[in-house]
Image (cartoon, rainbow, N blue to C red):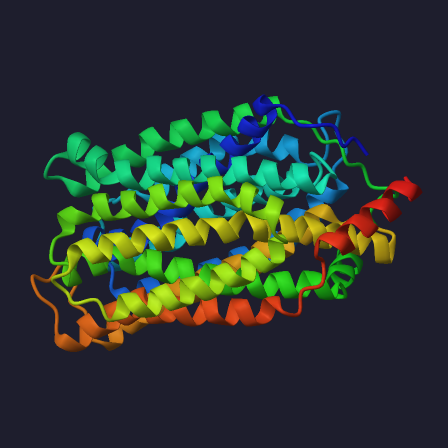
Length: 446
């Protein structure tokens, strides 16, 4: 295994791959529900059900993609080729998902039910190998933290490029025609995403090679990662993390529009959160240099739970306080995200040490599987909760019951997820000392 210090060029190149992914991921999280209900004209209950089914099916494809990547043997490695091959189809699927053909309600439902799953499938094709790539660029724990810090700084920047520019771009391209504007805006961003993926492929290298080839049986690999107790814990943390952030993200447009009272504030509100995200990424490395990353992860989740509850009690007219709280929440949330991905890489090393087989692709695919299940549940929860509370799409006003529902989705639900994450983290054993021992064992057997 090559543990040399990674160059800035490679770290930036790797990070651009996730910047590309977040152009789509953040758009889906922050805009897709609102786009389908208020621009494409689909019922909120249908969108919630479609998200649940489509994301559930997409999640099921993740382990298969990871297994295929583990079996792949090319001169470029196991994971990098998929980033190259999937770049252009990934961009095209983005444009299709934001297209609004002039069909009746039934036709619109069918079109959305085809193009949205296509988008999630293409995301899987590039993102599963991309996530696995982070575990084979280096085997050094310190370098992994640095690599993930670069990754999430650039991923957040990609998310900002997508979400903060989406509305202004849509207005500039489409004017009063919001449907045309959204399609044109995502087309511009999709070209940028495809280019970033190609750069990621060109600037990275796979260094960590398994001691023995993965078994040819898909189910044998799935069985082995399921037996990895530390992988299971990170899987639970992953689903809790995405449930919290995706529910808050999906409810943000509704929160700004109907609780803060102005849809025009959304870009500034989201930008504040995103700038906080970048600051959080930059803080991760110095904090984990000084303190155990697992302790930082647990205490940060507790702080996020407390701040989310506090936000529930902010008076509606206190916009400045809302902006301040969302900025701090943005900082803290993006501190835990890089740590969580390093913890996943650690579980791969742990599994290889215990079972003698390195299952990088399937392990990361399993994590993406539970992440997408969380995304599916959050999307369904938002759609069904709004439908149950009488939400009126594009309504000038909403009922008090609907407003309470929006506030709870934005604050209390994420708070519960963060609190549970802090509790679950107590069972995670792969701290600094344990990982050094595992690295020595694997190094001795290499």
